[in-house]
Image (cartoon, rainbow, N blue to C red):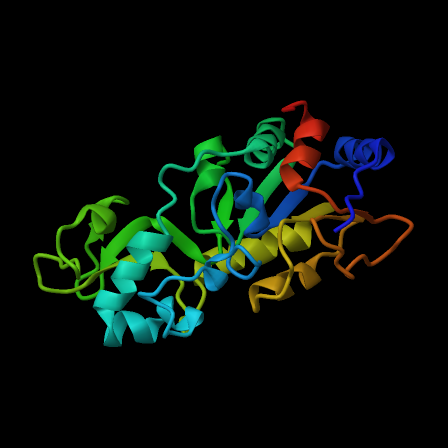
Length: 254
């Protein structure tokens, strides 16, 4: 990977941010990898980590509704071992976005991540289109449970007082995305004058399709690898570099 991280491009991004009053950020797993949270599909991602306990399973099955219902012990063992991001801290990208929101520039964060790091950094308007590990609830009665409950439960399959299984409020494979978050995300993107896409390969659907609702002036892509999604080379910008470094430099975080 070649890193395209020139001072000229940083200045261009600063100018675009300065000129914009309705910025929306659309981000994926690459936003949190700089906080030590692994992504899914890279060579070091969760789906490529060798673990004898789970090697016989298709990786996507382990985070599916079918696995939760049919093999809940396997689901919760994988979830506790691989999805615990409670010790992760926001990085420069999260902090920069929170700073832009506080300044009135950024109107919303649309995230595919489930780790809650945007809120931990101080962002207020966050559309979590794949849900979050920071909420749990009973599948039978709907009773809410705190974020730590599944991780700290001594039961292999955490259960509510009513006998129902307590699950994470994460959108699993085979499940529909949360309607309220999706609606908010689409509205925000459609109203933005600047859309910044960061830390995502735009290969996970339907989430990746939401960027097509953008009708604003400028599109910015910040990603380690090139993405062929610039709509207008004259007005759009791509920076191939770690997103924390880019947004950190633009906002004075680093």
